[in-house]
Image 1 (cartoon, rainbow, N blue to C red):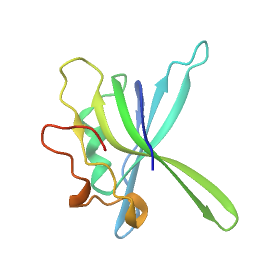
Image 2 (tube, one colour; image 1 turned 45 degrees about the horizontal axis):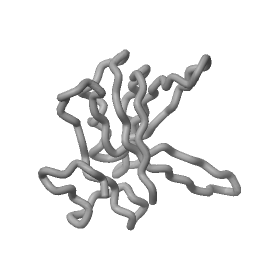
Image 3 (cartoon, one colour; image 1 turned 30 degrees about the vertical axis):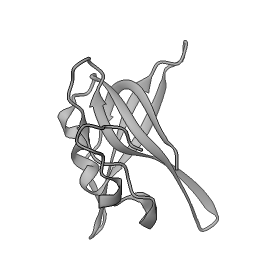
Image 4 (cartoon, helix red, strand yellow; image 1 turned 45 degrees about the vertical axis):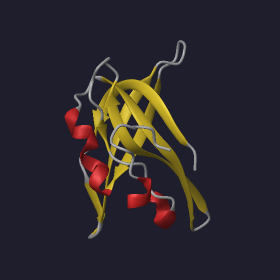
Length: 124
């Protein structure tokens, strides 16, 4: 699956929600400048990645690396922007990162196969 990235201003961080006893998710919203009409884009963090947004303050410019996730449930279709890395936009800032998601098992759990090299922060 293709990974994407986008920069914007962090608008809102939501609390972590326990969806089941073994699954947790957290959402956050960024504002992206798009001509005369700003766009408010909501992302989802899952499992151990829920804490990635903790290091950032609302109003701060960030870059979000994410994958598109889609599913069907009872004839309805849902799309999520699944964030797996968040970093400061400022030059010289250290990213707060997690490895890109594994393709197997719904893509939520990292594996040793997709761990980036210590000097390589590219998700592929």
